[in-house]
Image (cartoon, rainbow, N blue to C red; front, side):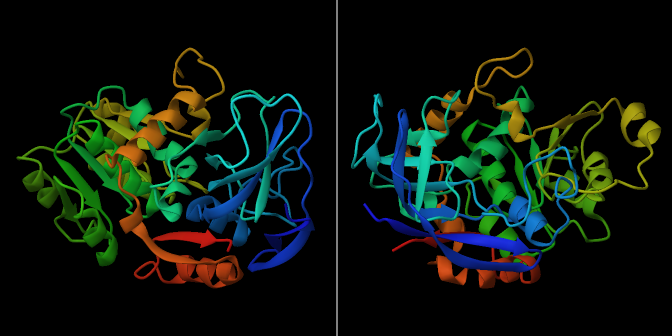
Length: 342
């Protein structure tokens, strides 16, 4: 077991670097994990990196605050367990809610800890994305009926790509990916049954109808994270359809006429935040984290959900600053980013 580890730190906006830290031994009920790879959550992490995350200035929120250690999606091997740990053992490979760090502790005594075993044949960069996949899974859960429903996903970053693939696994069809960046549309085409559309073309809604046999989609998932996209998402769904917000819109959605755009068309506008997957079942939120993790791991292990082809950059953590700048300024080159720790 290493006494000194490394993790990424954001001391202030637009600044990130690697620092050493003391690796603690696991206490009672804890497991210590040595990280293989961690995945970048571009939406959340870039919002913090650029200083626009809505909770940075909220005095009632302890997270996130600078200096900040980013990341929440990782894979690694257990290297030590604390007293009273059952069901996990040294050497076991697990996904967990790890930060961008060489080591992480998981306390199994908390409600529904974010940790689950995963087979060794799943590539590290893909396995590291498993906790991240909870968010697009929340969109699938929140939509209710998915089988046979036509679905358009607006925004084909990592969350949007995973959303398309999860709806495909659930039997939705036709599937349409919408993004102005051509490389992202090309990646979406790798999934069987997916068609793509540049939402910036002048007759986008007409083309959308053509791709969906003359009708607008039953479901539109907004994975852009841009508040201004909500009106486009609402205009792209059929009357009585559902618009599901899986990207976290940070800011005010202007120019939305809620009578014309929503109420008059009987559209359902549904939030699909990660909080919809909780530690235990709740009314309206029946899916638990344990159930979500075991499903995601099954999909990855079985090959029903492919992620490795979405990883455009798999680099050492020392390059994390370059990765953030690339994700922020060059979406035509950067899609999925994972960091390795060896």
